[in-house]
View 1 (cartoon, rainbow, N blue to C red):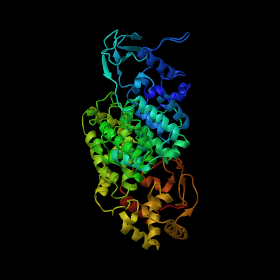
View 2: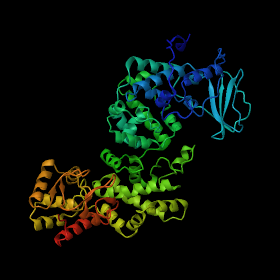
View 3: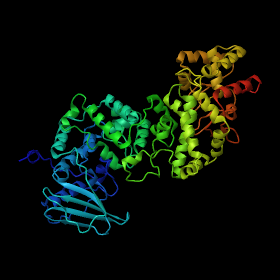
View 4: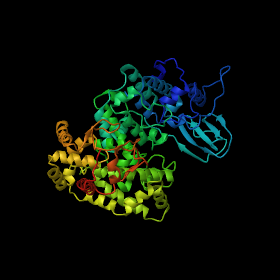
Length: 599
């Protein structure tokens, strides 16, 4: 007897189709694939292939495998095993996965002596046939207008019986996941519990691939993104295991949604150790991360890695393009990542051609708007809200170059992207901003190297020190108070957190500067929704709905924000109509002329 024959067999549990789909989400398609006896169906088909199945009284006939579902797992159960062993897997889903892997180990689908193939047929008939060499199945899907083909060749066999010749057929991958490996993994998880999480391993995977930290953590936990059919995507237990915020993990899910289920299975098919016990040893998860990084590079190539704080700030922009892809747009503009859902993406796409497809190869209106929105949200952010020396800020001018290069063309991507730029009531302002010299002046500021590394353009002491000195002398203010006054006069979101970051101030230093402005009657103290500060310019206030910033009505025309007819609400704001030194200077000119904010 072999190890599998002698291993203790648990009484099979019945899992609902919902439980099975939830446990396997992102790895195996859910629609129409799972029901309350799907595991039994897989066992039944396995026995039919082996030749050991005979229908019991009342038992239904063997049916062809469901539409594109579990047959994709043949030779690629590594992702399921990794997810079953990861600490960031809900206990109830872990049990489903362990039962599935244990069941799978006892079928021909885990046995490397069998050969399996998948393909398509021209006919429209569903069938199951078997002889002494193997079995084949055809499943016609009227809604999809296709007939899927699946065949198994028994050990020692040469060819499965075929009622008709397939249009095409491909061999199923054979990698990690022998019966012995699967049963060993199941046994270890049930004895020892999930593996300990290794933050450093996830960080190393992020740095090696260009994935965000949360996305790398999801991949390393066997959960490389998924569709949105089960909410929440992660529960409180899973988020706690990773240590990231819900918004960060949701952005990571969107980042990984560029992957198809098949790609997720292929990515993690062979990253598990030959002996699963290695997972629980020192550095076990780090070695999985190394293999995963190599598999990712083979599938997608390595991408530049954004600084963590920059990525977190990109998440807060809430663009339709995931934060990591927005970062790639500025870090490596020529090879910017395809955002998820691009209509250009054909499937299957040979890996050798994927590098030809970038964010600039837009083929549909949705794609064009996604790219345009990301560019026009990212440029002012990179300019005003990232420090000198940040790689995204450094790459922003090249992103503008690529945008203009595409727009200048006469091909389809140029026409489609142009429509994305000018679409809607913001379109003319975007086009004017690109063409009237404003964009060029902003780019010149980013390439001038006037700012010391680590300093921000939003700090007037860094970008306009002479102006700060003039304000301080004219109003008899300390330099810090003069700088803060200019920021309140002009910047759309001078929250306490932002001001301290831009100015490198402690809370005490910020408080002292604020006190000087209050003492001179230049500002008022108050609390207002979504402001993030307690100091305000005197005069009317314009509320705003996310993602627009609320602000003092006085500054709105100065910075290009559009207000409602009665001035009570910010209706539109995207691009500053000049560089910050220019606008700081104009704000101060208005104040000196007696046209500043008043109650």
